[in-house]
Length: 276
Image 1 (cartoon, rainbow, N blue to C red):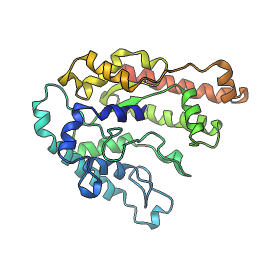
Image 2 (cartoon, one colour):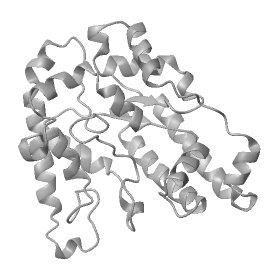
Image 3 (cartoon, one colour):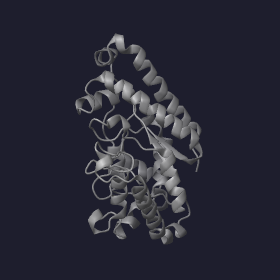
Image 4 (cartoon, helix red, strand yellow):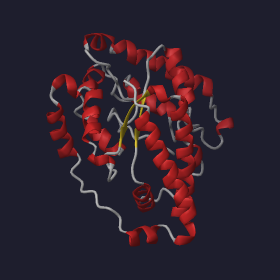
């Protein structure tokens, strides 16, 4: 889903000001939005705030320094778009993740590969602490997809050694997400299952996405739907029961049941807690 969101953000009216202001330039040339993601997650060196790498104790990793830099960039982004936000008739959201800014922003959780993959997830408490200290009004949205399709996709791309590892990993990840989204429920602005068999049929979610990221100021819900349809023309095919059984053998079924239950619980929480 975040791949599709990245492509949608290419045309997002809300991303025009950051690009004009150079926020999406190479981080070495002052691209602060592109740098922000790297401060949160980085595979090189000692890692980002949310994913210190093996040996970080010896390589200069400093969580407070990274945190302070994130706070400073959040302030700079907020100040940079202040004039645009003042003219807007609705909340003016700038996506931190999946914004197609600089190198394609692709944070999904758990993030990256490697031996520490299970620990490489965002901490919503720390994220919102940074927003508070920066004096910035932050929010979050949730992108979801059917668990069987998640397992199939990640296995093909080699993210997990096998589906049993995937089931356990994603169950724990969703439990973390559920805890964070419960505590920060009042900061949730949307739920999007663009690649989910059920979620993809929710046109109200498509309209909401368009409104959140600027299309409401520049066109109609129908015009964004047309653009969305062109970008998301992939046919979603239900997985057969045989395909599911081949993916998840019967002796793993209880663990898969837990995965599906927490997946559904997070979706229910998300839709019940949407705030403007």
